[in-house]
Amino acid sequence: MYDVSSAFKEKANQAGREVFCKIIVGSTTFLDDAVLDFDFDDVNQPDWFTFGTTCSNRFSFSVKFSGEMALRETVRPYVSFDGEEWCPLGIFYVARRIIRENYATFVCYDKFYLLDEEYSPSVELPNKAETVLKDVCEQAGLTFKNTVMKYDINSVPEGSSIRDVIGYIAGVNHASAKINREGELVFRYYNLSEWYYIFEKNCTDYSRGMSPVHFTKMICDTGDEVLTTGTGAEVNTIEMYNPFMTQGWLDILLEAISPITIYDMDIEMQGMPFLESGDLVQFLDLKGKTYPLCISEMELHYDGGLTARIYSRTRNYTDAAGRIDDLEYAIEELRSQLGNICIKQSNKSAVTLGTSEVTAADFEFTTKIKKSYVQVDINFTIESAASRSLYIDIYVNGVKKSRQAAHIPSAQRELLHYYYLADELPKGKNHIIVKFSLASGSAVIPANGLAATLVGKGMGRGGDGELKDRLTLFDKAEPYDITSKGNVCLAAASESAGADVNYS
Image (cartoon, rainbow, N blue to C red; front, side):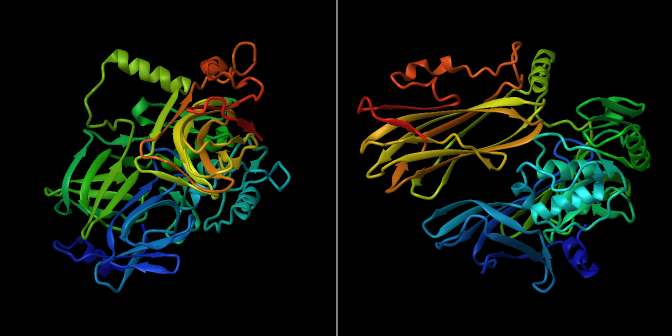
């Protein structure tokens, strides 16, 4: 919970309160008269209660604005109830911009969003966890606010990102990792010192589970073995993946968490900007009955007033959507276990291409097993006036790959297809971005002229140990030679048959 005065909390709980906001972007300040709305998503437990998560907070807003704003520009939003004491929501960085006439929409994330590059230790291993975390923070430009338990890290799994390693260390410390409101790395512990009460009178709607959850069992997949401590049903079990975990630390972890009992609950209420995901709170109903909660996620929405949705998730958390039958459930479970992924994207508005890179597709996904692979397909129409070469570059977990595709556009409208296979992805969260740029001139992808799909089979390698590229899917792209260039194919189908396709 962010530290604000008691007067601030009292004003936040008042009916008919007045809300002020300001958003500082670089050297520009937007006040209430310029801010149309904003959404703030603070996530600590994306699924259910566990340890070692490293979730990035998201902040998006729309303002009256017609100027220029750079990607990665710093964004600092604040909320007040008297115009004097301001509660910060965090420090964010612009990831996407949409500007139409005199209005602009920005999508921003905190620093965790930028830490998916692979971690390469600059200290010798084995080494103390504190030393490894210090090395991670120096490489990521982070300031760490807590202390670390004393234990040794023998090795770091190949392909682990900076964000992964932070999460592994936090998990052993019975905590989750977050970027706090000042932009610092903190470990969010679940140690109860003082309850904060959410009053039913401040809520518009809520639903809760029938019974509380008391944690009596933990399971940890280290990648090499599965560790277990305690006994209990699935609803009472905490599961995690952590290659740094040992049986001894897992036993200590269960002992540290065993006093906590929480309900799963979904609450719509007045926005309390000082609350944070990971906070332990009490819901107090009109009859005086209290229900302990752990805030898994908090969504704030501002459009002149400030509202919130708070989630406390455990394993008996169920979505309000209709139930699926047993066969559908079994199929979904099988797909999940195999790591099958299918994500589709398209452009709702026209995209103008120039000499600077423009994001054409942005995929975030989670793989279930080690050495998974995904396939990216992009079909798009390009209208080119005078451009010398179209370049397509791909970034996998923050690393720019060397397999660049290049095409010489004609002056007419062309339908192009780009194919990429990303192999041996690490288990866990992954991020793939495809970017377009031109050597010179300009071109346009019209609205709804681009369809991007990411498909992951999650099975890793075939029985003979060789990766399956499945290039036969693209045989109709003749006369272009799609076998000689390995995993990259850019095929053009245009009115001018025989257009050149170059690779560099």
